[in-house]
Image 1: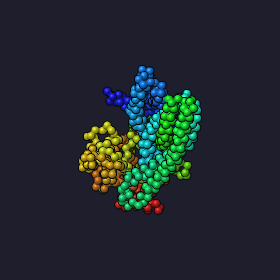
Image 2: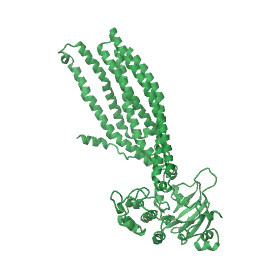
Image 3: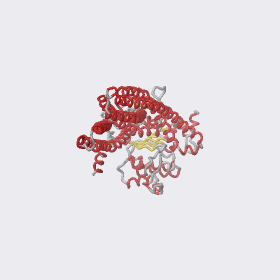
Image 4: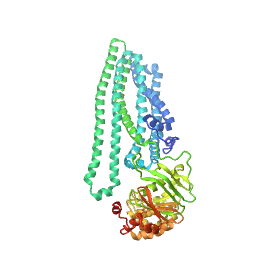
Length: 620
């Protein structure tokens, strides 16, 4: 039965639910409220339950005082006859009300809030961040971004729940204590009032420092994590260049910076606790002295003294607990602020409000007076007043040295970036007016920098078309000449073939094998527009020759943009477009361009073994 109750609270919220407004707001209070409001009902219940529990705890010194008073005024043998009903009420509060309240609160916190809120914050933060532009990820460490998302869920949950458990609980307790002590003797409120004032000053001075230093510490941790993950991600480069000493310094510098930030935070804690120890000593001594003096003067009964001193002791114990909890809260507040700066960044690549899915009927691709520069405000453009019409089913080869804008044109068509002027249309539809996903679904890309997901071969191959059957997947693998490679794969977990994991970025496969898997993936996707960006650059000549036949089959009936420094691989295209500094300098068939003796002809003459001599081109 208890398991069914827990299961009910477990499933009260989904950790992968999405908010109605999917843009987390900037600013600490709005950012926290954005997530907390999604679980508003259970948090209200928690406020009520913790308040009841705090009142029950505050009644404990009162009960002690009442019992002492009963002992002082009741003859032996008459205790239960005279005070039985009052004692039963005390038992009811101690045995039933207090445990039940805290039990229900524990179940709500541990099962409805903690796992679901942590998961929800992480999921919604990831859902938002993954939709940021490509530039967003190019400008940061992947490990740093991941660390901020992971820490945000836990930090927010801890900060909010501890605020209820500590701040709200303590407020109710102190209010009850003041009411009780005021009725015993208003003089007892003087040391408590002075203590509260000094405690508030201590809290006001130290907690902002804790939040600030925690934010600095969180950022230092994110940088350290980013550098460590960057080292692991590029472990082959580290090993092959024998840069152990340099890499050690690179990471150790971030460890030192993290330690320096940590020391600043710990120094604040030390000062804070030193002051609190003195404050608490003064509180207990003063309340006890006043209570005993009152009893000595006849103004306080023994029951009143037995009530006042436990209250002072509880407040003293609670003050250290509150300060510890407060420190934790403000440390988490620092973490939340640090995470918020990354998570709550507005999306810069947005679909139009009325965007519909792209409808590809023919596959025409048009660049219309396109201007683009990666660095806005800087002089010059990567792409400058570029216009090009690629007819449905036409095969275009883009030629030019590195930096001429070939890959940029492809990324603009994929809407990895937005053009600053002009327009790109697919079948007459401005790609900025349709959904990004539909644009990318219409384009199959095989790039020279092939990166596979750290998942199974099957998941990698089907990533572009999840609905593909295993038979279609294996046929694509055979066409890409990678079937034999896949069947020979095995990972440390014993998974083989299509179920084997390929490692981060596909490191368990050679460059040529990764390229063939990428080609198979695009074959399976079967998009109407095909982009081949140095698609066979990582392949040896024998495998390339075998795959070229399949690529020819793949290109049939599709609009194709092919980029290659090895000009022989694109010489058979319907039209070649020669680029220089983001502009078209020549276009025509291979034969036409050779006959003119222009830029392309010079490039062709400078081929050595099928590759472009870029140094010679640059020296022209």
